[in-house]
Image (cartoon, rainbow, N blue to C red):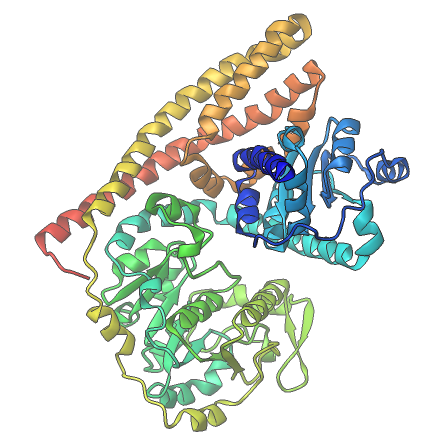
Length: 609
């Protein structure tokens, strides 16, 4: 009993620190079954492992980040923290039970509370979380260190994790630059869609409404032209979902999709939806999509907030787990996820060429880009990809990424049968090719109501939650007012910062106090609930660059150098934030105006949706 009592108190001490610093780990430990802790013993010796530490020294590069594979009972981690006080440690222990044994048997409170133990993940389910944190902070490469236990026993696991991180990091960088490219468009769309979202049903509210249905997801590739007549014949037998610009080709040939999906945030969508008929089709709009299309759509609407939309999630108080659709490289990926949410058992891909068959970019009827723009892309395409006929099409990097994204999505939806009907397109792994005439034979006995999705939306009587409307309006107004406060607080930081470099060289004690004061003032600015969702949306690269410099600033002990780093990097970030504030104020004011207008019109013509 005495041993049990001691173990319990040590677990409680450790658990308190974990809840404060790494709550995800505390939750994970709590969720483990209460198995006997006589699991495989620790192999870590109590005495310092000099040979291993010598090997570590040779592996550490110029960066300030150490990715440590393994925790065991924390002894080697303590050695690393002592020997490398200017580095941040990101520690991953794959064995959840081994970690629980460590926090149950040893008092690790000082180690778990050490400021340079910057991140801790335990178990495979927390690996992506670890990768995200590493990707956010690394700047000069990454030092990958494994405890002796894993070097001896699990080299294949180490290689696999390193490979997964390399892939994750590459995707992280692509995502950041994509966010940066569309930063102002997406932020505006997120904010301007808030009123519409409050008065519209979500895709999640139609979960499995068409369980067992066959869905045709139509894209804009040139092969679509050859199957237009077959799509006309298929419409009574399957749900037709148009992805992005393909609605132009469908409408031109007299085919009305059961649902049109829009994800893209660019104003070019005004051309895509220029036809009044296209604006009369049931619409699924994501919160990133160009807001004027949702405004102009005169038919039934469904919305989707994507898991990556931190702005909408903040204003609606939503977690990622409550949302179904994740961001994808192509609007077809959004349409596929919508079909999965609706309960599709089979998804047929049409017009999904993912390449330039016969040197064509789009199907006939797709006219939102000038011919010279698309011709140039086709002529300069640097790659080849195997097509469904066994020959090769030219393609480019953008289509290659879309293909990879779709194939990953297909793998992630194993319960759905995927079929590729695109006659001249690239081979898509997980979606075997079948021509439309064969697919028509399969589906001839299945029937779908011509207005299936429109009728479903109309029947879905969702009463608008006026408390939620008021809550969102209050948050918008509070954030708009708080932007002025941030502007004033930044001015105060700049005033202190302007004297910092001089004082660091002439009055070090005063400069040290200034550094602490600046850190506190910056903390007040950045720790607001709305700060990360808003500023990481509208200036993702600037925030990411500062995050990467943070380990360098925090671990720099020489006062003059630390002052220079703060002045240069925090100073630049604060200037960038200040430049964005007027743009954000304009967006917030318009979002509030749109919400007031929506609320007023709803009061005049009250309609339950």
